[in-house]
Length: 175
Image (cartoon, rainbow, N blue to C red):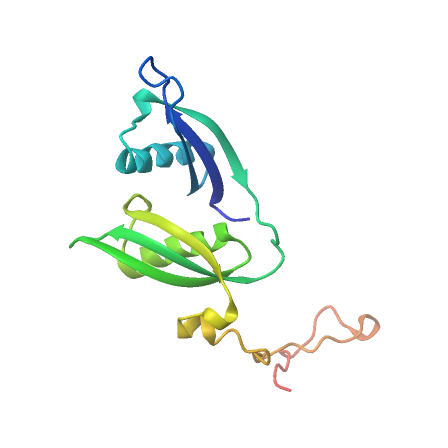
């Protein structure tokens, strides 16, 4: 289970006599829960349009679920983050079972490599990338059909009838 969920938040400016039918704004937000999703929605809407929480309302908040959660996919994530020296744009690729899992991996990666906090990272776009269009070598190396990992030092299990509860020597893990 991923720490982050993908939410679709729809909000608008409060209706007034000047504008009785204000424009609706829809945004896909990655957040741990609905409260944080609504907060991020207002944060981004304040930057993009002249609408703030006090003069607006949330129309709906829906969680978006993955269509194929059992299949591994490649994801490209476009982000913008504030570092100690300035604001940077970045494109990163991750493999995961869902968009939310890829975004969680991105947040962990950004925290590890760039010391970027959740509040300083803005996810611009998340897209599924076909295997032929993968740009990064560290993801491309995992796309080989004949990829295999060695299984060193396995303990050979004896059949149940011949197995002893305690034995005098350590198990041999070489084969």
